[in-house]
Image (cartoon, rainbow, N blue to C red; front, top):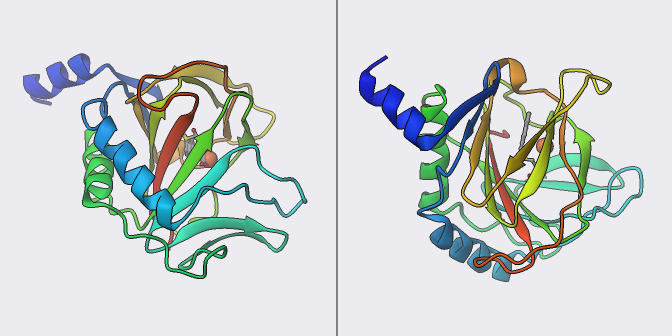
Length: 215
Ligand code: MD3
Ligand code: FE
């Protein structure tokens, strides 16, 4: 590894949290306002909504998508679909700013050539949470998932390959990016109930982007 890579990693606050799982603190901070402008634009066409799980629970996190396909859930199950079931329209195109960020972050974590076809956009308000789960609806589990945190901070729970494995907690903040691949790709993870707060960029919420190679 070249000295420059070592230093950029240190300056970036690169942290390996498990094999294949890397936290890139502040990686997206500079472009966060532009990312949020894209989210606002996307949500005008594909509004945030609270999906229902196959078990009949309404999620506390509001979601929308952009890209060739989007993640959806209803009483029939979880899947990726090209159309927004609420409007019947195709999901909005993924902005080049998004796909470029995802590719650069994946590369910084050692995954070259990441080309996401879906970006799930999650919106948390105080009290919203995401219970422990695995992301296993994607066809290609060899590709990593890249996640970008914007707005209010959150406590990220990261476990192992079994639901009962002990979880570790990581505080994630505005501009932090994480890459989950290799042996960590199917690890259980979740988000603790969001604490109240006031963020200069988003006000009272947290936005998370997750980039996936879904189909
Ligand atoms: C660890 N989102 O949308 S991103 C999700 O902050 C999701 O909104 C959370 O979990 C959020 O599915 C956490 C971090 C994340 C994403 C995918 C992972 C962590 C992961 C896949 C494997 C292991
Ligand atoms: Fe997940």
